[in-house]
Length: 293
Image 1 (cartoon, rainbow, N blue to C red):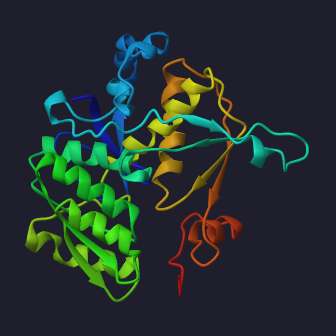
Image 2: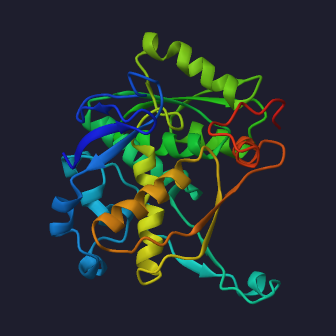
């Protein structure tokens, strides 16, 4: 297995790789996958990336899954950088502005689900569950179908119809809940043990971050190994921000980039902005955002 161990991002307690893991067994905070980066760098070289497959799995040595047969992929990642000339023209002084997009299931959630479901397959998991307000549900449903797993999805009743239909069409079991995504999450947490579900909720397992971190690798590769000055990110559950920062640290350790980092901007809706509020208040942990909409 490429992963040498899992480490709690809070208390640093190590957990064994190759076993089904959720949160840290000591403090119940998210786990992060750690690799032997010196060993990875022997075969993963930035000079030879151009000859590898055009997906996020081009960074194979720093992604989970031991056996390639367990990779569940729909061709996600290595998405194009689109220069936004017209939008950039509205800024003074002039800036170079790029937008990164296009993925299976039409959202960046595909990145996290390919690694999460691939690891679930390798660990012998047959049932997965997630609370979602839209895109994560569609991605989970598609990747679970690809892997031959059963997907159990809990969505707020006011979720856009297109997202609900997407899950139905790929064979997921969908339950609509009168409430918010947090209410959906509580249902998954309460029932997962009895139902035999593996909870792939945001930051409740270690592997969605690993797929999301490839945005950091791709940005570095596509910009000629010079990171942008600023990255604006639609925060969602925050795994992309965490993942990209993790990718930058991994690349620096492998000698691919220096210590300079981009300014990271967490973008959230004004009606549901727990990370923005926590940042502005100088808090280390974000509180639940009451009356979110």
